[in-house]
Image 1: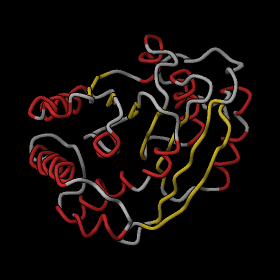
Image 2: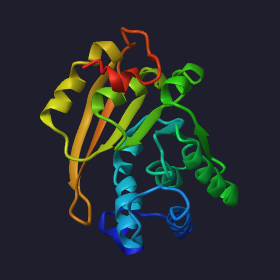
Image 3: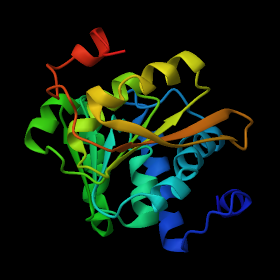
Length: 230
């Protein structure tokens, strides 16, 4: 892992690398009991989970200081690698209780990760309790941009940022997202494309909460996916 990270100029302490390696082993072991990932090969998982998560460190380091929410965390990616690398107070949020229980089990075995917590809830419900509670929302392969902007907006204060890890973005998806500036208050901040070591195309897009949303958010659970605003 050390040499692979150096290729991308990612420098982590031996202790942090040890934690990320332990997390990956734990995920692949638990994957035999519960479907956490379709990637079962260790080397592929290292690239497609750990390295993929860490490659947005430049965006996260440029984001406002404060709490981070990993929305749709699944097995803990990208949240755990990014939290370990930055030591941000981080909540790993997923709607699927069984996956959250797996993350909680790992965190309970590693008290050095006291800055991480895992919770089971839908983002819409979570925003009702933790409105504007996070400086940064990160998410990976969860939904199309218009849905992500709607879900992230009530969780962020003015100046807060959404960092979305995506595959190849279509012009249509980006155009639809741009139409939601007034509705969600989320405006485009940056966009970067890059390859993974295995050749897959990735894009990191950052949106900032630039003004209050002009509609009442969050909407009812599932509305963002069923009836997108754009």
